[in-house]
Length: 174
Ligand code: S3P
Image (cartoon, rainbow, N blue to C red; front, top):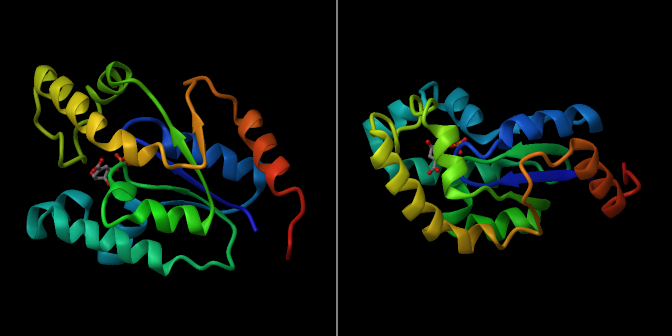
């Protein structure tokens, strides 16, 4: 059963890479943020605004618990999901986890024009964003490094990842 779980900081490219991998492996792709939004009929911004961050973390936890162990999928997680309520441990039990490692500088550059819809960084100036990413990445790195594999090149080829996954799980069990 292929369960590929991509973790990493906001803006590291989990969804983009995840969709490509899912396409190549012909298995479904999920983005935890989109699934939560759909289930609760609210945007992530609305959930943060109306109920606060810890409520959102609870919904993330609930989402992970609701994943069907019988299914195959590629999952792009919200950036903070693995680092709250020990979700990383659940993710490692559930499937094969990949940390998309990017430097704070690279992440800041990627996030500068992608702050909307991300309540933790919405409205920040470039300086504030740079400081936030630096601090938060430092805080979360230890958690992210618990992933089974680290993909540390931004140009990491989809084929490379898919080959690695096939090497780990060459046969479908269903
Ligand atoms: C968050 C990352 C976001 C989203 C929420 C909180 C975080 O997901 O879950 O805004 O704590 O890093 P992306 O990593 O998809 O931006």
